[in-house]
Image (cartoon, rainbow, N blue to C red; front, side, top):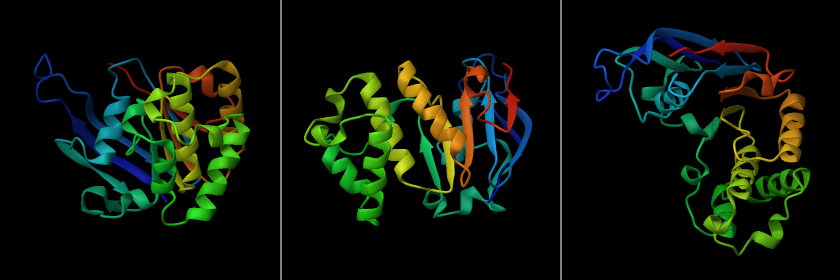
Amino acid sequence: MSLSFENISFRYKNCYPVKQSIFSNFSLNIQLGEKVGIFGKTGSGKSTLIKLITGEEKPQKGKILFQNQDIKKMKNLFENIAILFQKPEKQFVFPNIKDEIEFISERRKIFTQTLIYEFADKFNFPLKSYLNRNIYSLSLGELKLLQIILVLSLNKPYWILDDPFLFLDGDKIKVFKEILANINDKTILILSRNKSDFKGIIDREIMLTI
C-alpha cells in the first residue's frame, strides 16, 4: 500500500514572488509499513503536501498515487488514510464530544469505541467524564489529545500526522512516542519542524528547504 508523489510541481497562485514554487519536480515513494518523516521550517511545504493529498490544492504538474491509482480519481481514498491535521479545530465535525465519538465510530461502533477508550487510558485522559462537554471548551492540549485519540482509533492502515506533538506536554509526548515506536502494522508519514523529536521512531527522513 504505497503513497507516491511523482514529479510534483506546485506554487500558490497568489504567492510572492509569483514564480516562487513550493515544489519543483518533487518525487517521493512511501512503501507499505514504512515510517517516514518529512521535516522543514515553516513555509517549506509540509502542510502543502497534505493539502495536495486531500485535494484541497492541486499540483500544476505531476501525480499523487495511492496503491498505484491517481488520488484525483479515487472516491474511497479516506477509507484507508487517517490524517491528523496540524490545527485540531479542523478535525472535528460536531461540537459535542459524545456526538463526535458516535459519528466516527458509526460503521464499527463497538470496535472503534473500544479503541478510543484504550487510547484514552494510555494517555491517562479521562474521556468518559468529558462526553457531554463542548469540544471547544477544552484547552489546546486537551483538544490535541482528543484529536490524536480519535484519529488513532480509526485503525486505518495509513497514518499522516502533521506536527503530531504540537500543544502536548512532555508526559503525553512520551506516551505518543511509545505508541508510534511500537506500531508495526501501519504506514506512517510524519510532518514536523523538528526531526530530533522522532529519533528512533522513523525509518527514513526527508528534508524540505525553502
